[in-house]
Image (cartoon, rainbow, N blue to C red; front, side, top):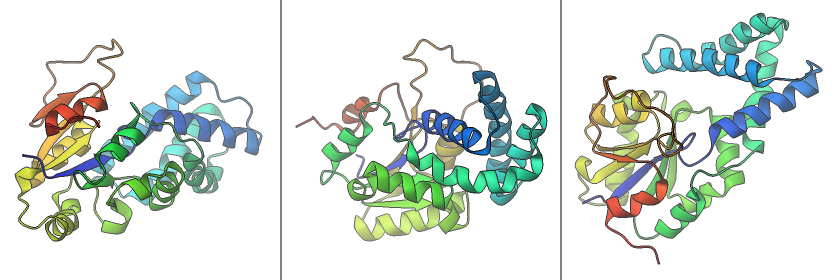
Length: 242
């Protein structure tokens, strides 16, 4: 039985790629860098993903990667890397200007409100996530949100989940770890984090539904449930829509 839900935010409840593209293109125009092409965005995404993997492995601190990724990106596309720190500061806020929900996530969270405790769990920056949660209305729909900047540790570090479990134990008396479910799109962050702390895991990977190939041979952490669409959460919770 699942008695509490932890929702990853970026890539699960909210379409992070849409917000990322819009934020970078808006700032390119503001800084006079010219058009930000799809090829440029793909280059940035590759650089950014590599740095976040380092964060998850504990190889770098978040303040470093936030600037270093833009330094590397700007160097590749011929922009002065000395602008990286200022650009990143504006980027954090610009991320919250574009709100696109994954699979009617707002309706799903609203439908589940009052039926099961729901919380956000994010490695995003405090500035970006605070704005996203407010503009999306998720701050009113969720029962709480845990942001790594406030906790001091990033998923998948088990220490990220210490205050999470403490809050859930207070909100849901008698709850056990195996009655908590984390739903997220990242195997290395959300799912591995759930495994590390002993809670149940649900891997959300909509790219399969879109026809994208998935490497079935890749090593994975323990996955208790797999979904391609967030609406499938009702079946996992054994709940019906109203």
